[in-house]
Length: 486
Ligand code: XMP
Image 1 (cartoon, protein in one colour):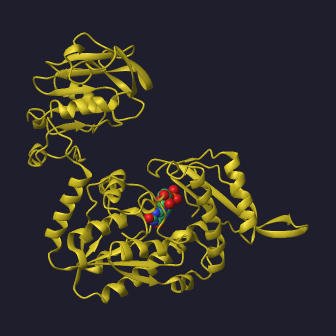
Image 2 (cartoon, protein in one colour):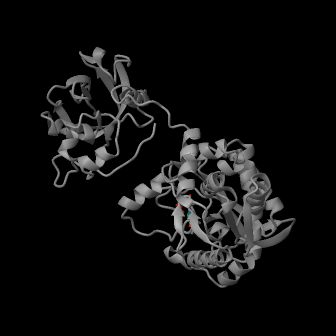
Protein backbone atom coordinates (compact mmCIF):
# COMPACT_ATOMS: atom_id res chain seq x y z
CA UNK A 1 0.00 0.00 0.00
CA UNK A 2 1.32 3.37 -0.97
CA UNK A 3 2.04 5.79 1.85
CA UNK A 4 3.54 9.23 2.30
CA UNK A 5 5.10 10.72 5.40
CA UNK A 6 4.15 14.35 5.91
CA UNK A 7 4.75 16.94 8.63
CA UNK A 8 2.08 17.44 11.28
CA UNK A 9 1.96 21.12 10.29
CA UNK A 10 0.25 20.35 6.98
CA UNK A 11 -3.15 22.07 6.83
CA UNK A 12 -6.31 19.99 6.50
CA UNK A 13 -6.92 21.34 2.99
CA UNK A 14 -3.38 20.49 1.85
CA UNK A 15 -3.72 17.06 3.36
CA UNK A 16 -7.11 16.40 1.79
CA UNK A 17 -5.92 17.58 -1.61
CA UNK A 18 -3.68 14.49 -1.61
CA UNK A 19 -6.73 12.33 -1.32
CA UNK A 20 -5.68 10.05 1.55
CA UNK A 21 -7.69 6.96 2.32
CA UNK A 22 -6.46 6.94 5.90
CA UNK A 23 -4.28 8.94 8.25
CA UNK A 24 -1.87 7.55 10.83
CA UNK A 25 -0.62 9.90 13.54
CA UNK A 26 2.77 8.60 14.63
CA UNK A 27 4.39 8.42 18.02
CA UNK A 28 6.75 11.14 19.19
CA UNK A 29 8.98 12.02 22.12
CA UNK A 30 6.96 14.93 23.58
CA UNK A 31 4.23 14.94 26.19
CA UNK A 32 0.89 16.28 24.98
CA UNK A 33 1.25 18.77 27.85
CA UNK A 34 4.65 20.06 26.73
CA UNK A 35 5.11 23.55 25.30
CA UNK A 36 4.92 23.36 21.55
CA UNK A 37 3.63 19.79 21.66
CA UNK A 38 2.94 18.82 18.03
CA UNK A 39 -0.72 19.06 16.99
CA UNK A 40 -2.59 18.73 13.74
CA UNK A 41 -5.11 21.01 12.04
CA UNK A 42 -8.34 20.21 14.00
CA UNK A 43 -10.35 20.05 10.77
CA UNK A 44 -8.55 16.79 10.07
CA UNK A 45 -10.53 15.20 12.90
CA UNK A 46 -13.86 16.02 11.28
CA UNK A 47 -12.81 15.21 7.71
CA UNK A 48 -14.41 11.76 7.86
CA UNK A 49 -11.13 10.09 6.89
CA UNK A 50 -10.22 7.17 9.17
CA UNK A 51 -7.51 8.10 11.68
CA UNK A 52 -5.26 5.78 13.65
CA UNK A 53 -3.19 7.30 16.45
CA UNK A 54 -0.12 5.42 17.65
CA UNK A 55 1.31 6.18 21.12
CA UNK A 56 1.65 9.99 21.14
CA UNK A 57 -0.81 10.06 18.23
CA UNK A 58 -3.37 8.14 20.33
CA UNK A 59 -2.81 10.46 23.29
CA UNK A 60 -3.33 13.47 21.06
CA UNK A 61 -6.61 12.02 19.78
CA UNK A 62 -7.73 11.41 23.36
CA UNK A 63 -6.79 14.90 24.46
CA UNK A 64 -8.35 16.68 21.49
CA UNK A 65 -11.53 14.65 21.20
CA UNK A 66 -12.91 14.71 24.72
CA UNK A 67 -10.84 12.03 26.45
CA UNK A 68 -8.15 12.50 29.08
CA UNK A 69 -4.41 11.98 29.26
CA UNK A 70 -2.62 12.15 32.60
CA UNK A 71 0.86 12.05 33.96
CA UNK A 72 0.63 8.98 36.11
CA UNK A 73 4.25 9.13 37.23
CA UNK A 74 4.96 5.62 36.01
CA UNK A 75 5.47 4.82 32.37
CA UNK A 76 5.74 1.58 30.47
CA UNK A 77 8.80 0.77 28.41
CA UNK A 78 9.49 -2.31 26.35
CA UNK A 79 7.75 -5.66 26.34
CA UNK A 80 4.32 -5.55 27.97
CA UNK A 81 1.39 -7.92 28.21
CA UNK A 82 -1.87 -6.54 26.86
CA UNK A 83 -5.36 -7.86 27.69
CA UNK A 84 -8.47 -7.45 25.61
CA UNK A 85 -11.24 -5.48 27.28
CA UNK A 86 -14.96 -6.10 27.19
CA UNK A 87 -16.14 -4.71 23.90
CA UNK A 88 -13.10 -6.03 22.07
CA UNK A 89 -15.16 -8.67 20.33
CA UNK A 90 -16.61 -6.01 18.03
CA UNK A 91 -13.20 -4.41 17.56
CA UNK A 92 -11.77 -3.78 14.11
CA UNK A 93 -8.16 -3.74 15.25
CA UNK A 94 -7.74 -6.33 17.98
CA UNK A 95 -10.66 -8.79 17.86
CA UNK A 96 -8.54 -11.45 16.14
CA UNK A 97 -6.05 -11.41 18.99
CA UNK A 98 -5.77 -13.88 21.83
CA UNK A 99 -7.03 -12.63 25.19
CA UNK A 100 -3.48 -11.68 26.17
CA UNK A 101 -0.69 -10.77 23.80
CA UNK A 102 2.72 -9.16 23.76
CA UNK A 103 3.05 -5.54 22.74
CA UNK A 104 5.87 -3.00 22.82
CA UNK A 105 5.27 0.13 24.87
CA UNK A 106 7.24 3.33 25.26
CA UNK A 107 5.37 6.09 27.05
CA UNK A 108 5.24 8.16 30.22
CA UNK A 109 1.81 9.79 30.03
CA UNK A 110 -1.26 7.55 29.96
CA UNK A 111 -4.71 7.80 28.45
CA UNK A 112 -7.26 7.38 31.25
CA UNK A 113 -10.37 8.18 29.22
CA UNK A 114 -10.75 7.57 25.48
CA UNK A 115 -12.24 10.17 23.11
CA UNK A 116 -15.99 10.79 23.36
CA UNK A 117 -17.85 7.96 21.69
CA UNK A 118 -14.89 5.55 21.72
CA UNK A 119 -14.80 2.23 23.55
CA UNK A 120 -11.73 0.81 25.24
CA UNK A 121 -10.70 -2.44 23.56
CA UNK A 122 -7.52 -3.35 25.45
CA UNK A 123 -5.57 -2.53 28.61
CA UNK A 124 -2.42 -3.53 30.44
CA UNK A 125 -1.71 -3.87 34.13
CA UNK A 126 -0.38 -0.28 34.09
CA UNK A 127 -2.74 1.51 31.76
CA UNK A 128 -6.52 1.24 31.50
CA UNK A 129 -6.58 2.39 27.85
CA UNK A 130 -4.10 0.49 25.67
CA UNK A 131 -6.41 0.63 22.64
CA UNK A 132 -9.67 2.42 21.81
CA UNK A 133 -12.01 2.59 18.84
CA UNK A 134 -14.84 4.78 17.65
CA UNK A 135 -16.03 3.10 14.45
CA UNK A 136 -18.78 5.65 13.92
CA UNK A 137 -16.31 8.53 13.60
CA UNK A 138 -13.56 6.21 12.32
CA UNK A 139 -11.17 7.19 15.10
CA UNK A 140 -8.78 4.52 16.40
CA UNK A 141 -5.92 4.65 18.86
CA UNK A 142 -3.29 2.26 20.22
CA UNK A 143 -0.93 3.11 23.03
CA UNK A 144 1.45 0.33 21.94
CA UNK A 145 3.64 0.32 18.84
CA UNK A 146 2.21 -2.00 16.19
CA UNK A 147 5.03 -1.07 13.79
CA UNK A 148 7.86 -2.71 15.77
CA UNK A 149 8.76 -6.37 15.43
CA UNK A 150 8.50 -6.99 19.18
CA UNK A 151 4.74 -6.40 19.09
CA UNK A 152 3.53 -9.83 18.13
CA UNK A 153 0.85 -9.43 15.47
CA UNK A 154 1.45 -5.69 15.24
CA UNK A 155 1.40 -5.89 11.45
CA UNK A 156 -2.10 -7.35 11.69
CA UNK A 157 -3.30 -4.27 13.55
CA UNK A 158 -2.00 -2.00 10.80
CA UNK A 159 -3.43 -4.28 8.13
CA UNK A 160 -6.83 -4.34 9.86
CA UNK A 161 -6.91 -0.54 9.94
CA UNK A 162 -5.87 -0.19 6.31
CA UNK A 163 -8.04 -2.89 4.78
CA UNK A 164 -11.00 -2.28 7.14
CA UNK A 165 -11.96 1.36 7.75
CA UNK A 166 -9.62 2.73 5.06
CA UNK A 167 -10.71 0.14 2.46
CA UNK A 168 -7.20 0.09 0.97
CA UNK A 169 -6.17 -2.73 -1.30
CA UNK A 170 -2.59 -3.97 -1.54
CA UNK A 171 -2.04 -2.85 -5.12
CA UNK A 172 1.29 -1.04 -4.66
CA UNK A 173 3.32 -3.90 -6.13
CA UNK A 174 6.78 -3.75 -7.61
CA UNK A 175 5.37 -4.07 -11.08
CA UNK A 176 3.07 -1.11 -10.53
CA UNK A 177 5.93 0.90 -9.03
CA UNK A 178 7.95 0.26 -12.18
CA UNK A 179 5.08 1.14 -14.50
CA UNK A 180 4.36 4.38 -12.63
CA UNK A 181 8.03 5.40 -12.54
CA UNK A 182 8.53 4.62 -16.23
CA UNK A 183 5.48 6.70 -17.19
CA UNK A 184 6.58 9.61 -15.01
CA UNK A 185 10.13 9.64 -16.39
CA UNK A 186 8.85 9.59 -19.98
CA UNK A 187 6.59 12.56 -19.33
CA UNK A 188 9.30 14.48 -17.57
CA UNK A 189 12.12 13.93 -20.04
CA UNK A 190 10.45 14.05 -23.44
CA UNK A 191 13.07 13.63 -26.15
CA UNK A 192 16.09 15.01 -24.25
CA UNK A 193 19.24 13.14 -23.34
CA UNK A 194 19.62 11.95 -19.76
CA UNK A 195 22.86 11.40 -17.89
CA UNK A 196 23.33 9.02 -14.98
CA UNK A 197 26.40 8.55 -12.82
CA UNK A 198 26.72 4.91 -11.79
CA UNK A 199 28.54 3.96 -8.61
CA UNK A 200 28.18 0.19 -8.72
CA UNK A 201 25.70 0.40 -5.85
CA UNK A 202 22.09 -0.64 -5.89
CA UNK A 203 20.43 2.81 -5.91
CA UNK A 204 22.12 4.25 -8.95
CA UNK A 205 21.89 0.88 -10.74
CA UNK A 206 18.13 0.58 -10.21
CA UNK A 207 17.57 4.25 -11.07
CA UNK A 208 19.53 3.87 -14.32
CA UNK A 209 17.73 0.68 -15.32
CA UNK A 210 14.33 2.25 -14.69
CA UNK A 211 15.20 5.33 -16.71
CA UNK A 212 16.52 3.15 -19.49
CA UNK A 213 13.26 1.25 -19.55
CA UNK A 214 11.50 4.59 -19.94
CA UNK A 215 13.65 6.40 -22.49
CA UNK A 216 16.02 3.78 -23.96
CA UNK A 217 18.92 5.23 -25.91
CA UNK A 218 18.38 8.74 -24.59
CA UNK A 219 20.16 7.54 -21.45
CA UNK A 220 23.94 7.79 -21.18
CA UNK A 221 25.50 6.28 -18.07
CA UNK A 222 28.83 7.43 -16.73
CA UNK A 223 30.95 5.22 -14.52
CA UNK A 224 34.00 6.91 -13.05
CA UNK A 225 36.58 4.35 -11.99
CA UNK A 226 38.52 6.26 -9.36
CA UNK A 227 40.92 3.40 -8.64
CA UNK A 228 39.38 3.10 -5.18
CA UNK A 229 36.74 0.48 -6.02
CA UNK A 230 36.74 -3.05 -4.78
CA UNK A 231 38.01 -5.95 -6.84
CA UNK A 232 36.03 -6.54 -10.03
CA UNK A 233 33.48 -3.77 -9.49
CA UNK A 234 34.24 -1.85 -12.66
CA UNK A 235 33.98 -5.02 -14.73
CA UNK A 236 30.67 -5.89 -13.18
CA UNK A 237 29.18 -2.50 -13.98
CA UNK A 238 30.39 -2.80 -17.57
CA UNK A 239 29.11 -6.34 -17.94
CA UNK A 240 25.69 -5.54 -16.49
CA UNK A 241 24.98 -2.26 -18.21
CA UNK A 242 26.78 -2.51 -21.50
CA UNK A 243 26.51 -6.23 -22.26
CA UNK A 244 23.30 -7.24 -20.49
CA UNK A 245 21.11 -4.15 -20.74
CA UNK A 246 22.76 -2.55 -23.82
CA UNK A 247 22.88 0.80 -22.10
CA UNK A 248 25.32 3.39 -23.44
CA UNK A 249 28.09 3.52 -20.88
CA UNK A 250 31.04 5.86 -20.66
CA UNK A 251 33.61 4.09 -18.50
CA UNK A 252 36.12 6.71 -17.38
CA UNK A 253 39.32 5.18 -16.07
CA UNK A 254 40.53 8.00 -13.89
CA UNK A 255 42.55 6.20 -11.22
CA UNK A 256 45.75 8.11 -11.92
CA UNK A 257 44.04 11.43 -11.59
CA UNK A 258 42.57 10.47 -8.22
CA UNK A 259 45.88 9.12 -6.91
CA UNK A 260 47.56 12.35 -7.99
CA UNK A 261 45.22 14.53 -5.89
CA UNK A 262 45.56 12.13 -2.97
CA UNK A 263 49.35 12.37 -2.87
CA UNK A 264 50.49 13.34 0.60
CA UNK A 265 46.90 13.74 1.88
CA UNK A 266 46.35 12.09 5.25
CA UNK A 267 43.55 14.07 6.89
CA UNK A 268 40.25 12.17 6.47
CA UNK A 269 38.18 15.24 5.58
CA UNK A 270 40.79 16.47 3.09
CA UNK A 271 40.75 13.07 1.46
CA UNK A 272 36.98 13.08 1.14
CA UNK A 273 36.97 16.57 -0.31
CA UNK A 274 39.76 15.80 -2.79
CA UNK A 275 37.92 12.72 -4.04
CA UNK A 276 34.52 14.44 -4.18
CA UNK A 277 35.86 17.41 -6.13
CA UNK A 278 37.81 15.30 -8.58
CA UNK A 279 34.73 13.20 -9.21
CA UNK A 280 32.76 16.34 -10.03
CA UNK A 281 35.42 17.64 -12.42
CA UNK A 282 35.63 14.31 -14.26
CA UNK A 283 31.87 14.05 -14.49
CA UNK A 284 31.56 17.62 -15.81
CA UNK A 285 34.06 16.88 -18.55
CA UNK A 286 32.13 13.84 -19.69
CA UNK A 287 28.81 15.69 -19.47
CA UNK A 288 30.13 18.50 -21.66
CA UNK A 289 30.71 15.98 -24.43
CA UNK A 290 27.16 14.65 -24.47
CA UNK A 291 25.07 16.84 -26.77
CA UNK A 292 21.82 18.26 -25.37
CA UNK A 293 21.93 16.39 -22.08
CA UNK A 294 19.31 18.24 -20.07
CA UNK A 295 18.59 15.77 -17.28
CA UNK A 296 20.54 14.03 -14.59
CA UNK A 297 19.37 10.86 -12.84
CA UNK A 298 19.79 10.68 -9.08
CA UNK A 299 19.14 7.67 -6.90
CA UNK A 300 17.49 9.72 -4.13
CA UNK A 301 15.35 7.54 -1.84
CA UNK A 302 12.37 8.45 0.29
CA UNK A 303 14.35 8.50 3.59
CA UNK A 304 16.73 11.09 2.03
CA UNK A 305 13.74 13.31 1.33
CA UNK A 306 12.30 12.91 4.82
CA UNK A 307 15.67 13.55 6.45
CA UNK A 308 16.58 16.58 4.41
CA UNK A 309 13.37 18.22 5.60
CA UNK A 310 13.86 17.53 9.27
CA UNK A 311 17.46 16.81 10.08
CA UNK A 312 19.52 19.26 12.00
CA UNK A 313 22.53 17.14 12.74
CA UNK A 314 26.14 18.14 13.10
CA UNK A 315 28.48 17.13 10.33
CA UNK A 316 30.36 13.98 11.22
CA UNK A 317 31.79 13.34 7.76
CA UNK A 318 31.47 15.06 4.38
CA UNK A 319 29.60 12.44 2.43
CA UNK A 320 30.30 11.98 -1.18
CA UNK A 321 28.18 9.89 -3.45
CA UNK A 322 27.09 9.96 -7.03
CA UNK A 323 24.18 12.15 -6.00
CA UNK A 324 26.52 14.78 -4.64
CA UNK A 325 26.91 16.74 -7.87
CA UNK A 326 26.80 20.53 -7.63
CA UNK A 327 23.56 22.36 -8.32
CA UNK A 328 25.14 24.77 -10.77
CA UNK A 329 25.45 21.97 -13.32
CA UNK A 330 22.20 23.21 -14.89
CA UNK A 331 20.56 19.82 -15.11
CA UNK A 332 17.02 19.05 -14.23
CA UNK A 333 16.91 16.11 -11.86
CA UNK A 334 15.20 12.80 -12.56
CA UNK A 335 14.61 10.91 -9.32
CA UNK A 336 12.70 7.72 -10.11
CA UNK A 337 13.25 6.22 -6.62
CA UNK A 338 12.01 9.28 -4.73
CA UNK A 339 9.07 7.45 -3.22
CA UNK A 340 10.82 4.21 -2.33
CA UNK A 341 12.50 2.70 0.70
CA UNK A 342 15.64 0.60 0.37
CA UNK A 343 13.82 -2.75 0.52
CA UNK A 344 11.52 -1.60 -2.27
CA UNK A 345 14.49 -0.47 -4.36
CA UNK A 346 15.99 -3.94 -3.99
CA UNK A 347 12.72 -5.62 -4.95
CA UNK A 348 12.41 -3.38 -8.01
CA UNK A 349 16.03 -4.15 -8.91
CA UNK A 350 15.32 -7.88 -8.82
CA UNK A 351 12.17 -7.42 -10.87
CA UNK A 352 14.15 -5.50 -13.47
CA UNK A 353 16.63 -8.37 -13.73
CA UNK A 354 19.69 -6.78 -12.16
CA UNK A 355 22.22 -9.35 -10.89
CA UNK A 356 21.72 -10.36 -7.23
CA UNK A 357 25.30 -9.35 -6.37
CA UNK A 358 24.40 -5.80 -7.34
CA UNK A 359 20.93 -5.76 -5.81
CA UNK A 360 22.13 -7.14 -2.47
CA UNK A 361 25.51 -5.46 -2.36
CA UNK A 362 26.42 -4.18 1.07
CA UNK A 363 26.69 -0.36 1.15
CA UNK A 364 30.00 0.99 -0.09
CA UNK A 365 31.03 4.61 0.49
CA UNK A 366 31.44 7.06 -2.39
CA UNK A 367 35.13 7.72 -1.61
CA UNK A 368 35.68 3.95 -1.77
CA UNK A 369 38.61 2.18 -0.20
CA UNK A 370 40.29 5.55 0.52
CA UNK A 371 38.27 5.97 3.72
CA UNK A 372 39.43 2.52 4.85
CA UNK A 373 43.09 3.41 4.51
CA UNK A 374 44.41 5.42 7.40
CA UNK A 375 47.21 7.73 6.28
CA UNK A 376 48.25 8.28 2.69
CA UNK A 377 46.35 6.53 -0.08
CA UNK A 378 48.76 5.10 -2.63
CA UNK A 379 48.12 2.55 -5.40
CA UNK A 380 50.23 0.02 -3.46
CA UNK A 381 48.26 0.45 -0.24
CA UNK A 382 44.96 0.24 -2.12
CA UNK A 383 46.13 -3.01 -3.69
CA UNK A 384 46.96 -4.48 -0.26
CA UNK A 385 43.54 -3.51 1.08
CA UNK A 386 41.73 -4.75 -2.02
CA UNK A 387 43.29 -8.21 -1.63
CA UNK A 388 42.30 -8.38 2.04
CA UNK A 389 38.81 -7.12 1.25
CA UNK A 390 38.22 -9.92 -1.28
CA UNK A 391 39.10 -12.48 1.38
CA UNK A 392 36.80 -10.94 3.99
CA UNK A 393 33.88 -10.86 1.58
CA UNK A 394 34.54 -14.38 0.25
CA UNK A 395 34.66 -15.86 3.72
CA UNK A 396 31.59 -13.95 4.91
CA UNK A 397 29.68 -15.19 1.88
CA UNK A 398 30.90 -18.73 2.39
CA UNK A 399 29.65 -18.59 5.99
CA UNK A 400 26.24 -17.49 4.67
CA UNK A 401 26.38 -14.19 6.54
CA UNK A 402 26.67 -11.67 3.71
CA UNK A 403 23.05 -10.51 3.68
CA UNK A 404 22.73 -10.66 7.45
CA UNK A 405 25.54 -8.18 7.94
CA UNK A 406 25.01 -4.52 7.12
CA UNK A 407 28.67 -4.28 6.10
CA UNK A 408 31.80 -6.36 6.35
CA UNK A 409 35.17 -5.18 5.14
CA UNK A 410 38.87 -4.71 5.79
CA UNK A 411 40.66 -1.59 7.02
CA UNK A 412 44.35 -0.75 6.61
CA UNK A 413 45.70 1.32 9.52
CA UNK A 414 48.89 3.35 9.41
CA UNK A 415 50.67 1.61 12.28
CA UNK A 416 53.08 -1.28 11.91
CA UNK A 417 53.79 -4.14 14.24
CA UNK A 418 56.55 -6.68 14.71
CA UNK A 419 55.96 -10.30 13.78
CA UNK A 420 57.80 -13.47 12.91
CA UNK A 421 57.22 -15.38 9.68
CA UNK A 422 59.42 -18.21 8.43
CA UNK A 423 61.89 -17.53 11.26
CA UNK A 424 62.30 -13.98 9.97
CA UNK A 425 61.42 -10.83 11.85
CA UNK A 426 58.72 -8.85 10.08
CA UNK A 427 57.67 -5.26 10.58
CA UNK A 428 54.47 -4.81 8.67
CA UNK A 429 50.91 -3.44 8.64
CA UNK A 430 47.96 -5.13 10.31
CA UNK A 431 44.54 -5.52 8.69
CA UNK A 432 41.53 -4.69 10.82
CA UNK A 433 38.35 -6.55 10.02
CA UNK A 434 35.13 -4.61 10.55
CA UNK A 435 31.70 -6.27 10.41
CA UNK A 436 28.54 -4.62 11.68
CA UNK A 437 24.83 -5.17 11.92
CA UNK A 438 22.51 -2.23 11.44
CA UNK A 439 19.12 -1.22 10.07
CA UNK A 440 19.92 2.21 8.74
CA UNK A 441 23.62 2.97 9.45
CA UNK A 442 22.64 5.64 11.98
CA UNK A 443 23.57 3.18 14.71
CA UNK A 444 25.38 -0.12 14.38
CA UNK A 445 26.62 -2.99 16.48
CA UNK A 446 29.78 -4.98 15.86
CA UNK A 447 28.86 -8.40 14.57
CA UNK A 448 29.50 -11.41 16.79
CA UNK A 449 31.23 -13.35 14.02
CA UNK A 450 32.05 -16.98 14.81
CA UNK A 451 35.66 -17.52 15.94
CA UNK A 452 36.34 -20.09 13.24
CA UNK A 453 35.28 -17.58 10.57
CA UNK A 454 37.59 -14.96 12.09
CA UNK A 455 40.36 -17.50 12.18
CA UNK A 456 39.89 -18.42 8.51
CA UNK A 457 39.97 -14.79 7.48
CA UNK A 458 43.04 -14.11 9.58
CA UNK A 459 44.98 -17.09 8.24
CA UNK A 460 44.11 -16.36 4.64
CA UNK A 461 44.91 -12.65 4.90
CA UNK A 462 48.35 -13.33 6.41
CA UNK A 463 49.12 -16.07 3.88
CA UNK A 464 47.74 -14.39 0.79
CA UNK A 465 48.30 -10.67 1.25
CA UNK A 466 51.95 -9.61 1.12
CA UNK A 467 52.80 -6.81 3.54
CA UNK A 468 50.42 -7.91 6.30
CA UNK A 469 51.60 -9.71 9.43
CA UNK A 470 48.69 -9.32 11.86
CA UNK A 471 44.87 -9.26 11.83
CA UNK A 472 42.62 -7.56 14.38
CA UNK A 473 38.85 -7.46 14.76
CA UNK A 474 37.12 -4.15 15.50
CA UNK A 475 34.66 -4.59 18.38
CA UNK A 476 33.32 -1.04 18.49
CA UNK A 477 29.67 -0.20 17.99
CA UNK A 478 28.33 3.05 16.51
CA UNK A 479 28.28 5.25 18.51
CA UNK A 480 30.98 5.71 19.74
CA UNK A 481 32.73 4.58 16.55
CA UNK A 482 31.50 5.25 13.03
CA UNK A 483 31.14 2.34 10.65
CA UNK A 484 33.95 3.46 8.37
CA UNK A 485 37.30 4.35 9.91
CA UNK A 486 37.44 7.74 8.23
P1 XMP B 1 29.70 6.05 9.01
O1 XMP B 1 31.14 5.68 8.73
O2 XMP B 1 29.48 7.53 9.05
O3 XMP B 1 28.90 5.53 7.74
O4 XMP B 1 29.14 5.35 10.19
C1 XMP B 1 27.52 5.33 7.68
C2 XMP B 1 27.20 4.64 6.37
O5 XMP B 1 27.47 5.51 5.26
C3 XMP B 1 28.43 4.94 4.40
N1 XMP B 1 29.28 6.04 3.96
C4 XMP B 1 29.12 6.69 2.79
N2 XMP B 1 28.26 6.47 1.78
N3 XMP B 1 29.21 8.28 0.59
C5 XMP B 1 28.33 7.27 0.67
O6 XMP B 1 27.57 7.07 -0.30
C6 XMP B 1 30.10 8.56 1.58
O7 XMP B 1 30.90 9.49 1.48
C7 XMP B 1 30.05 7.71 2.73
N4 XMP B 1 30.76 7.69 3.88
C8 XMP B 1 30.26 6.64 4.64
C9 XMP B 1 29.16 3.92 5.23
O8 XMP B 1 29.74 2.91 4.41
C10 XMP B 1 28.04 3.41 6.11
O9 XMP B 1 27.22 2.49 5.43
